[in-house]
Length: 270
Length: 268
Image (tube, each protein chain N blue to C red):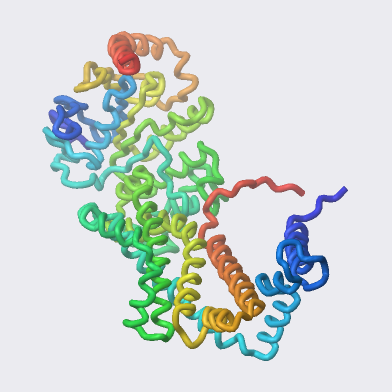
């Protein structure tokens, strides 16, 4: 089967200041996501996870290697992919409804049809009746739901998610994770989910990929998560099999996390 | 005890200023404090009552309208043309790194130049009518709006921008739906300053050479040492500058209703 998204021997080097040595963020990384698969990428903070996602989205050009979307080499932006950002990505001058329908507007869908679909999606993410609010009038969790609806309304085949819930408190976060799983299982998209939270990664995914500490990060391990679905992210964390998987993956990650920590500490000291 | 509303304080302060002005300038009301002659204070600073009389006569007999109309026309034209030019050039240079790198020293030089000295040149070019004043006003307004739009474009959130691109926005849609609205809040903060500058351009232009306008009235009165009329002209100008600023505020509140307000709790 052709994978939905595949990164083939990707290397990313950021050019250094005024001819100095470049910074190699990602080195020789190969990974692929099957159609309908939910894959998480975990790794220590600052190891280049987001860089990898931007490569998959086409926002960043790789220094070496090939990105393929359903078998076709990627040129320019990845039109098959929806991207959910870590930071605030809603347009603050647009109401929630106008934000959700932005993608439809860009595609030339008529305003009435767009508004109708927008209302449907707002309802689906639990924001019915909030359509005329501006982003600053919504809570952090509501803004994330709005951003989720904004991406999903375009029905992308691939979802790229960059720690989308990291700014939320733990209760809101688990609620959003359950909602995400529900929306995902209704119409299986391929998901590439970036997180530094191992528990989040295990409870959501079919597969977890562990990255090494930067610079020149690359996958150091891959784990299939055979927990039964549908899952409740809060409850599944208590099951013995979850703990088993957690320990196994953490064992593989631990050295890298400590390495990453030591590096950032050294930077501060130096 | 109920709190005295702010507007009451503001009016009270205004009345107090005029009262003090009156007391200090009316001949013979109090012995001269500084001048050797009791008429001198009135000669240098005018008398509020006489100033109000001049304004009253202007508006009742209608002499002022033609001058006010000319000045407001010049101000509005300078404001609109300067703002549009500033917006277009600001967007252009904000989006094109090459153009902004090449033009940077020129923009800085033109901004640093005291542009009021261009007034005589504009008079040679555009004559003594309104267009020489409009041109002066445009040079003043343009740079204020330009720098704000430029800054506004540079400070568009890269995440919002990338998000719009991922949602499928093409270049012109990015300009229309992301850059422009993002720059708008910067533009509006500059419009308060630039509406005042448009006014300055109009009045200074008239002052230097014209046959109509409030600046012309002030210049005429100054020539005959009619200090009360000079002050009357200044007061009328101030009043209309306030009015224009209010119009900008109303437009701002309508267009920027998405901005977070300071206090948002409702008390019933």
